[in-house]
Image 1 (cartoon, rainbow, N blue to C red):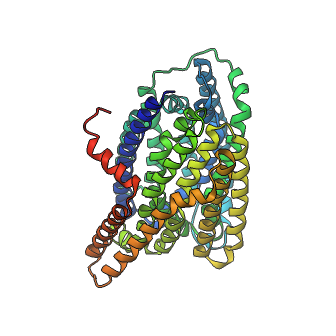
Image 2: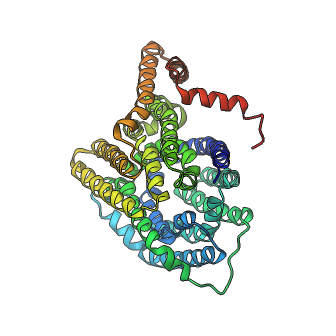
Image 3: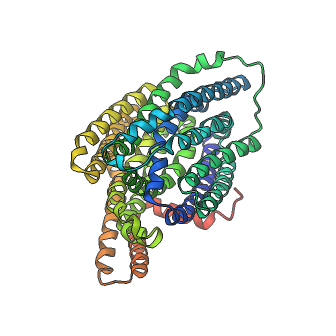
Length: 492
């Protein structure tokens, strides 16, 4: 691909990715605040302990074929068609299995010591309803792959914004009517339904019969490793909710999920903005000498430029944020949120590294690193279980930072990016973000009003960070300013 074409696709993808993910952040923030005010930690815990089963089933349904489609040199109708019918049939079988196993899931959590005081009998019908979203989502997986493959980020942004709005309004309406945790479950299913309908609306591809599954055999060597990786990531990413639900209570799961939700929202804003275009662009640059390394380093600097001030800043204002938005009933989630925020930069950086290895066809490496990370994370969290929820969360965060380091070592082997180079790409932004927060802390110590303190912390941190970027002559900062000034001169 010509350099100009690749640059234009990257720029357009980043802009629309930023717009879509920015809107997603705002909508998620608004709906999340309203629902958290209306519902209790136990309500969030009821749906939180089911997430691992939903994510696991979704991972198995996808089986890595969506990523395999994006990574194939050429994709035919037969490829999309085979993936579509495989996804739908697999989802139907998994739903039947989970439907029958719902009472066993309830029994697993109900027998826990602290949880024995909570009546979880409603968990069985709740689980069966939530699991319906697996089948609904499977109907749109191939269409999503088509949009992803063709880099239609604008259409994906429209889909996400619409689905979030409709599902959020549904959840709030039900919460106001007193449906408690059923409002969260319905919101989730409604989001899947809207996504699927709109994927069909914006994608020109349609499934047909009869179907040949021969293309799946061609992709299986690659996709099977992505599948195994996804399973490992699903287990490691949800192990805390499972252990908290088993050994503590659904209320504790609710506190953790609330902290994790806000942290993930901030992390995903950075992560999704980059990853919407990372794999296709890195794949297109693979045959152009050292260009893939240059593209990767620029994406790493952009990730650090956004990630460190956003995530460390969120940790800095977490107490004020929780008190103002979702009230004091969620105050126990503050220290958990602070730990998660400080370590969550590992996820956008790690995912960027993962996308590089996928673009180079190294799904085996992805699997190995994910297995090592999953085992280390589970071991650390289980080891810290007797010391309480905060200790378990710290172990989770430390494992995430080790995972990022593991991926940086893998990148060094793939494109020759030394750890020193990666450190120099990231460290200036981390240092400037930390210094900005220190300045803001000193400048706002005397402020007592909660709202004023929250606003002052954000304003001083942002101003200090921008000033440090300017004084240090940051090329990334100047490029972003230049892009913002000129974005109206060319149609997107």
